[in-house]
Image 1 (cartoon, protein in one colour):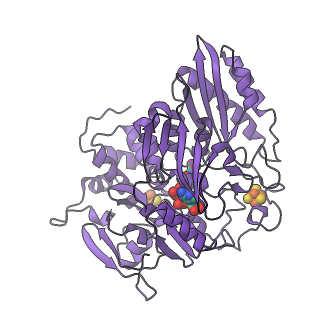
Image 2 (spheres, each protein chain N blue to C red):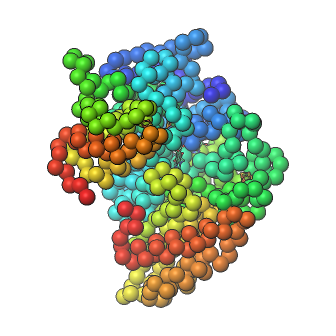
Image 3 (cartoon, rainbow over the protein chains, first blue to last red):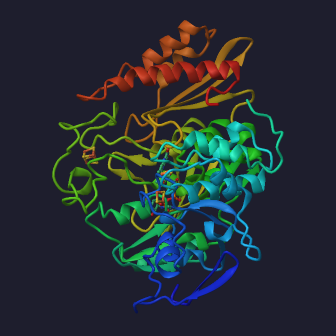
Length: 169
Length: 332
Ligand SMILES: Cc1cc2nc3c(=O)[nH]c(=O)nc-3n(C[C@@H](O)[C@@H](O)[C@H](O)COP(=O)(O)OP(=O)(O)OC[C@H]3O[C@@H](n4cnc5c(N)ncnc54)[C@H](O)[C@@H]3O)c2cc1C
Ligand code: SF4
Ligand code: FES
Ligand code: FES
């Protein structure tokens, strides 16, 4: 039974959420995207389609990019979650190089798709510090940008590759 | 989402017993990529009172080689199948099919068991309840098929009589090609069905209270070459308009074994014995492959708007067969 409290570790901070029917409680029907935004106030994670098609809600669950709109929060008990808010350096407030590169390249217009894209890139670089252009496009293939910033995104990502010099086609 | 109770189970036996005790009010959730959408949009008149999380069961995501072939746990993720050296080495069509599903994030969540049991994508069936009310049809147990006289551009070409929905699973096409068996667990014990018997015109072989406990694929014939191909409208993330898989064994340039499977053209994935037999004993020149593709599609019964799928299916079959001959992927 999942009536015990649910513990999430979001951006290295621990949250214990009571499951129940009172206002503010976690309900079994809550998706992770809902909990992050409405319960924890982490509104950097966006909800676009709410059905798995756009990638805006992408967060890292135990380091892997997943769609938080299709995950029940009660199923994340004990799990480590990273959202866009977790990327800046907590001491200095300095942005992650990927975030900085998106800004420097103007890789967005409205910015709605940006947090999700950056989370997928973060996971890509963690497993593969010198990805090819093809690997970058593959990692981003589950993200839609309604503002047509795709080419700037590819430029931003290429500009933030940790170990430049990976083969490009 | 409308409320439900959420229960974690820790063994398959426990899952089966909760399903039984619930008297049809409980439903399994695995990766959640299909069922969460179904529940959010309330496409079905029935709504589960209990969601049974089988992800809490340990060690059900195995991919194991043994002397009889490959054993796959129901919770094996599609991302893992696409990457697994054991799958890629001898079961390449399965790795390609898993790789073709959805997006990287979906593949990190989606399980093989869920892929086989996902609900149909017929757009009448999937119509969201929040926009003017769900559409009832024969598959939902009330009324007749809306697609047969409606917009059926993505519907079935074969074997459909009352419901014309096509099976959306890509993984099932590769599993059919490779002769997989599905191990089913229920309150009465275990049983095994071949993949070709798993899909039914209005659903699948699972009886109420039964779940998929594992999948077994026999070792493919020595020297077999395989290829899975999929035609979609939006390349990186979409269901198949048609998918095809082929397996070929050659001996001295002569075809000794041939298998052809198509997806998204029937209520389940489908093999084409006449076309396969036509290839056996022949040298596989291009015109022979094209002839086989033509034979495969001879029995197609297109509806008003899906005749174009016949040409796509023929092309995919010839391409998958010739990719086997080149032993080279057309996918990427
Ligand atoms: C945007 C998007 C794109 C997609 N593209 C594709 C695609 O290209 N190709 C494709 O094939 N699919 C596609 N899918 C469907 C995708 O949901 C499935 O591929 C996925 O594998 C389902 O697995 P899951 O573990 O998430 O299933 P869940 O959603 O957890 O479950 C699906 C169904 O299976 C049942 N179930 C799950 N496990 C078992 C079990 N062990 N025994 C009995 N019943 C079980 C559940 O009760 C439920 O009814 C797509 C989905 C989305 C949202
Ligand atoms: S094809 Fe099947 S699911 Fe679609 S409307 Fe007809 S009966 Fe319903
Ligand atoms: S909001 Fe989750 S994929 Fe669009
Ligand atoms: S910048 Fe607007 S959706 Fe991508």
